[in-house]
Image (tube, helix red, strand yellow):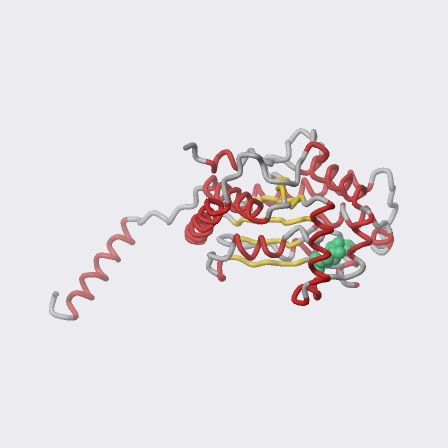
Length: 296
Ligand code: AMP
Ligand code: MG
């Protein structure tokens, strides 16, 4: 059997040359998807390896990892984040959810609030929604752009300018040791409809449903265009996008976990080498401790 991990970095990856067509994607899992039990076992293994890799990342002190999650409502962002990172030391990662900006946030440039929540070296930072809302929801609902009080907005250029700002921002992060990896959980409209109905019919899920979610659903095609353009313009070698089929949660979680593990492995984080001085200290420490109980 071939190792699926290096392949995971190619599969579902949005091309870097801008050629990306959302209509060519399927939200259903690929035909070679392993059966349920195998997916569950694989996820368990990946979750463990992610924990091990994060420990190395922390000891290595050179890199941070930023994982961005974007999707239509009910695609499973929250549960995917919960499952994939369930084995990682809680001190080793942090999740930030970005909702509607506050009055104060609106007074800053559109990257300011994410810039304040970036992971430090050794950590995995997870963005549940992100600066990409600024070229998605803000694009589909232009009143959000108006609320930003920007000078001289040219509607014909503003989105390309934002893509350029985002590319530059993420390249800056990458050059400074933050590996950026971005996931679009791609659900189909039919599957979203089923999940919304579940949220209405199952009491435990009622809290997740807001009538306003149907407004975004009614703008589905506009969102698809916005996703296509944003992903095509910002998937680059230093910050790749992955379009993950999201109709089957088990497959989606494994696909995300494979990419996370492969991304961390590619950084090759290492425990720092022990130098001569430290080796001498280790030996001296051992000698002293052994001397305490008579040399045993
Ligand atoms: P949820 O993730 O379901 O709690 O919803 C958060 C809401 O905040 C979503 O409807 C997002 O589209 C919205 N949101 C996030 N970022 C922005 C932004 N920059 N401008 C306007 N709305 C946003
Ligand atoms: Mg919502």
